[in-house]
Image (cartoon, rainbow, N blue to C red; front, side, top):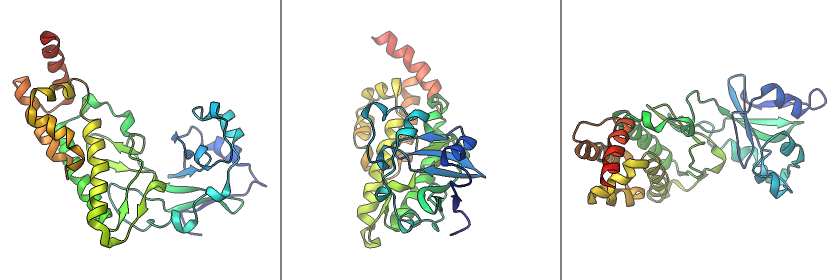
Length: 269
C-alpha cells in the first residue's frame, strides 16, 4: 500500500457515514462520485457503470436515494495494476490516479491529485481572453504530445473532466485512458489531437462567434477540419484576427466580440 492509498474499515465507520463527512461531492457521473479528503480526491466507483442492476429511472438522479440502490459489481472494478499504471508520470496538464481507495481491503475507488482550478463547465466563456487561451492551448499540445509519446490514448473528453481558469488546462478522470505500444506514437498522437482539438475548438467557438465564421470561407473550413489541427492555438490565432476584422477593432475578448457581433447580426437579420 503506497502513501496515497486510503482505506476504511466498515466495522469502525460505514462507507455512507464516511462519505457524508466528506460531503458535498466535487462531482458525480456514470462511474461514481468524487470527494475531497485531506487534500486528495477520492473517486468512489459507485455509479451505473460499476453496478449490477440500476433502475432506469434513477440513472440521472445521483442522490442519496440513488446511491442506496446501488449494488457494486466487484468484477467490474479495475485492478490495482490498471489503476496505478500511470501513477509515476509527471505532466502539467494531465493528472493520473496515484492511489487506491479501499473499503474492507477491497478496491472501491481511486485517489487522484486535487486540481485547484475550476471545471471548464463552470468557466464563463465570455471571459475568454484569446491571448491567454492561445498560450494555454500551446502548452496543452506540448503536454499532450508527451503522453502520446508514452502510448497513452485519451478518452471521455468533457467539460466536467477538464479544468480551466482562463490561463491553463488540466485534465482529470483517468480510468478512460488506455495505453498502446510506444511504436504507435503517430497513431496515438493523431487520435489524441482529434479528441482535444475538436473539443476545445467547438467549445470555445459558440454563439455569435460561430455564426460569424460564415462570413469567412477560410475560417469555416478550419472549423470543419478542427480535428486535424495539431495545435488549437493555430485556430484561435486565426479566429482572433477574423473577429478583429469583422468587428472593425482589435479583439482579444470573447465577451467583447459577442457584444459587437450581436448588434451586427441583429441589424443584418
